[in-house]
Image (cartoon, rainbow, N blue to C red; front, side):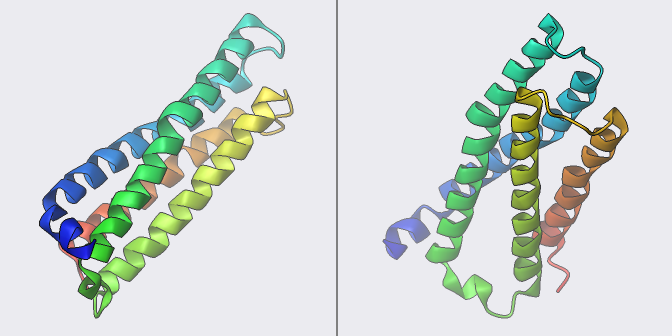
Length: 149
């Protein structure tokens, strides 16, 4: 298995990057939908449309993209386990990806609250939350590309 993964390492890396781009696209868009959803009257056509958009974005794009990001990323580590030794940047990156996965979970819970018309947060809160994945992404990319330590 390790030989197969190692011989297809560049494919794994390409698929990992594609998955991460898809994951981040959804993670940047979903809280923006929440901002607009806050302004929609509960029970209105607009509110119901946002519920559909949020659910589909999470179910069909963000969740599969996160899962494939993890699968391809971990496959690269399985292919080359030496990456974990003495690579502080990789440990830091994995920690930030775990945090990003936690933010993903928070967004999933927010989606469920909006679906039940139980949102209590103002649009400003979601504007701030919209920046969290961006900040994490910046540090993750810097760690992966620059490998500072």
